[in-house]
Amino acid sequence: MPISRDNYYAWPMRNQFHDRHQLLAELKQLIADKLQLSEHIAGKLTQEEPLIGGSLKLDSLDVLELGMYVEEEFGITLGNAAEARAALVNLASLADFIQARGRTTPAFSSNPVPA
Image (tube, rainbow, N blue to C red):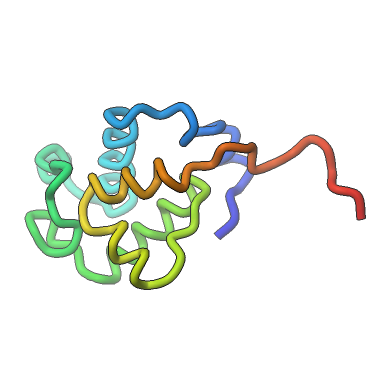
């Protein structure tokens, strides 16, 4: 899923400069906002809490949506099913994956590529 200009400019070079604590906080907020979780449930989310099942009670469709939101917001691709499953085990594994795949160059360039 491509990154929109709005997302890119709202979060410029987001992965390159994140420390882990900030990234985990943003992931918690993303999960709470996009999956419409109550603040009480989202506040209890730990790094090790399973994303499927557990206290979040997310099902496979919720996790699929979360994967799409992560791809859009962070400018990464989860890849094949096995890779996505490993990345979406819990917040810690998702943060590790994002940091490993983080964008290091801008998604949009002011210099067009010659045709």
